[in-house]
Image (cartoon, rainbow, N blue to C red):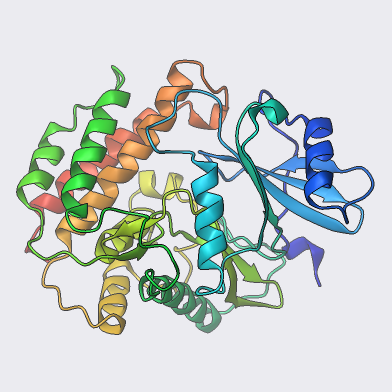
Amino acid sequence: MNQQLLDQAKQVRKGEELDLSAVDIWLKQQLPDLSGSASVTQYSGGASNWTYCLDYPGQSVILRRAPNGTKAKGAHDMGREFRLQASLRESYNYVPDMLAFCEDDSVIGTDFYVMEKLTGIIPRKNLPKALKTSEQQTRQLCLNVLDCLIELHQVDHIAAGLDHLGKGAGYTQRQIDGWSERYQKAKTWNVPSGKFVINWLQNNMPTQERICLTHNDFRFDNLVLDPNDYTKVLGVLDWELATLGDPLMDLGNTLAYWVEPNDDFLAQSTRRQPTHLKGMLTRKEVVAYYCNKMNIDIDDFTFYEVYGLFRLAGIVQQIYFRYHHGQTKNPAFKNFWIFVHYLLWRCKKAIKQQGKN
């Protein structure tokens, strides 16, 4: 296996250090087979929960914990994330094995859980330079990724014991209300009010609503690919936002991150996944493929597109709010307010173009 292809954690960010001695004592009580001392590194991709790799002799595990600072109500619930994946594992093969959950704040000051490390390629902004790719293989990767989302949306959540995850009917209204409120609460002086987009979403909600298990952060950089065949998905990560919701809204969330080769320079500058490669489907092709395989007939995807973009603006603004108020010092968040402007502009552009495509 070419080690250059594998995703690697990096040095722990300043201010986000892990009390390794406390974790080590607790973890060895939960996993008696662990021995020796661990080294700790941190994954750079996450802007929400903090994710670390603990490398013990003979075994590596992943630890996830909530960040410091103000938390949105219901967010960063490590116990919920742990139990959801443990329940889903039997119905959806792309979930890592859950190993241990800690709700004792005396260990590191917050809840955290430990899970299996999936060794492979995480397709971040660019695929590894050492990876040999082709347009045909990249297209197959794209289709396989979409099939993973479709398979998730087809899980029998009741049989999986996950019918308690969400409130079901009325999901669309709750999401619009919730993200509108979260955006307004996190608003800083240097971003728009968002009222035009909020009002449009409130007045244009679809009359039909479908309910299934949704991931709500389904992106390429939350996937682990097989290093021996990058078209194959080994795992789906980051289940913090998963719930029972509308599948088309989940797809809208995914497409908010989907940057195409012909998108403008601001979109290109914020690209976090390799959707620009030759062989990748366009956003319009993704919608057509998904709806065909899910047997969904839809004339206009604009509401879901706008919702996905506005929700992303809310997420970005919440992260920027923490940086703005000194709750995190991660320099990657310094200019997030500019991205919020851009996303709201994209929302307005999609609304104005409705029915013209």
